Length: 88
Length: 355
Image 1 (cartoon, one colour):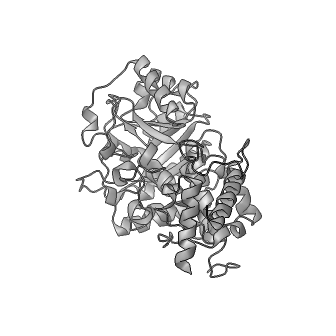
Image 2 (spheres, rainbow over the protein chains, first blue to last red; image 1 turned 90 degrees about the vertical axis):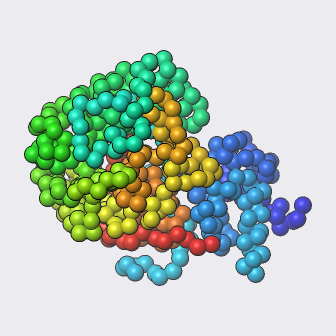
Image 3 (cartoon, rainbow over the protein chains, first blue to last red; image 1 turned 90 degrees about the horizontal axis):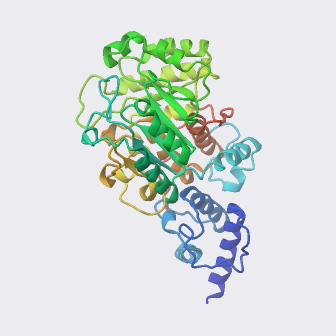
């Protein structure tokens, strides 16, 4: 796995755990392929909140039409990576 | 820009670091779990109002299902798929109180849209939205019912479930003061709705730019003069009296206008007819409303609320959004107390944030 992506995944997991006050999971044990909507119970307003925190963290804008598609930590990490790469 | 606000994009963490904004944010986000769907309870009504959304389109011809067991099964299935808030509407839910009770017993958060002429039992502890379309003379002309406001107030005196919903039409704008004064004198609360034309409607109740401006001014005066009575905010006024409708301003997210089944209303919202069937192509909170003319209060409650991301650009815009959400919760959720208004300015809605 790409080291940068791996770090991004861990950081996103940390953000989601903090924002949703999830218990019994750590950034290291959070399955990056878990469906946040169907398997974690994240709703659309939670996702919008996470998108705002990610905007702060990575300095990227997330299109409103995109964040409903960001349904796993891995997809979010790849989305961020693409955004950062295209901004270079 | 406004006093103390810099002309730049703020970090979200900076915005919510403001104590008042942060407190309201923490207050409203506790309700992000609300997931609504709406249900036509009966195809009957005890009055007939000009421009009524229910008696337009196909849904009025759906066969009534009065079977309590069927409704219980539906509610349990709704709960199972994650619905946490029900809106019981068309045509007149108070005509089928046993079904309202059944819904309440399974999903205890919700709201009933009623004309207020029948009293619903206190055991059905939903918010009750009582529709008012002007003073009693106008109500008689448009709704063919005598002494409506007096009867509604008598039915729901000292009832914390009740909030009156004044629907502004071009012909009743100046009567809103009289109605608000009466409700205030009797300790009731009121919120505002906008007449939104049904598809194909070209009658005299359709708003024009002039009547929208007149309504905006009237709402502002009443909100300023009756802050304890009027559940609204300056941003509610902007959103609902803008010359552009809600869809143009905020991109309506109900399935009828939103083909996406990604997370959000497009995925979870359903509008059940009285035969307990639903149709994705017709699914929104006010089916058969002309989407271009939709400024309906129920639509705004979901459509504006869903657009948090684009409002989180600076403290003023986010405050306005928080005021809107805080108002929505006070109007729709039993026991939720409205906070002090954060943004007194009438700011323009933000455009879609470009990626």
